[in-house]
Image (cartoon, rainbow, N blue to C red; front, side, top):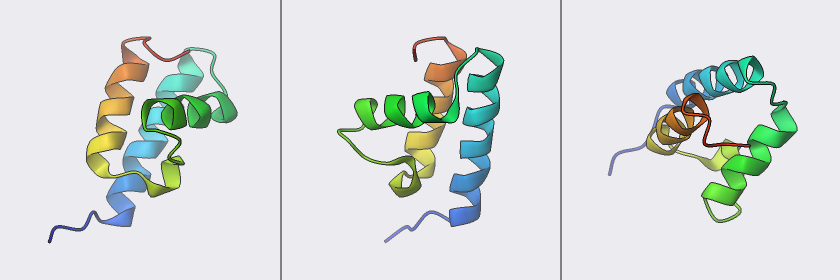
Length: 64
């Protein structure tokens, strides 16, 4: 079974926050958007794959 390294997840999350901040979104909005995309999941429970997909969505301005 593959388990994500928490440091990798955190690293991608910091990229999400930075990209979102550049688009005028605050942390609360980003967390809510992540939860909406992943069935209520808090970002702290996310995987690297989920974080990476969410980062792409933020960069594409698909998150509001």
